[in-house]
Amino acid sequence: MAKNDSNPGDAVTEQTPVKKLKALLRTAEAAYKDQRSIAGGYGEQIARAVEHDHLHKQAFAAVVREARLTPEKLAAFYDSQSYYRDVLGLDERAASAPRLPMAEEGEEGDPNVHRFPAAAE
Image (cartoon, rainbow, N blue to C red; front, top):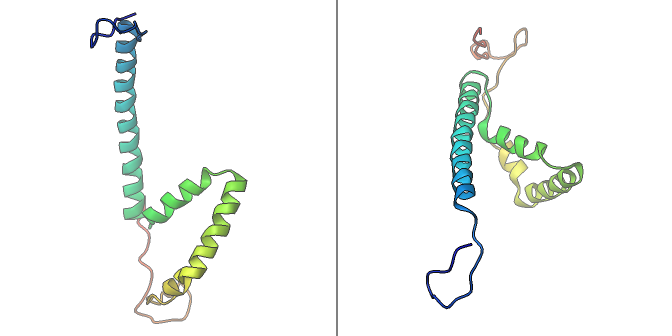
């Protein structure tokens, strides 16, 4: 127990023991370093997938957040999102975006426009 130094007449308050406080600080610092290391490795994987595997970073992040929801919360989220997209006209806005027509292998289409072949790993 430590006495409150601000007013000598104040009541004594209990404090975390110094040894425990220092041990918690060491644990917090180690956890922070571990988090940064994990996040860095994950970030590198995402960057590679964006560059080489056509990953849409924002769409993937949204799906990761959705995957953490319970089925009930996911259903409520989808109901609300569908309503918001409809009211705000977002589906129509997305549909109005110009798209380059791509011919798949063996399909008819503009012979000068084809998907770039995937890089060999």
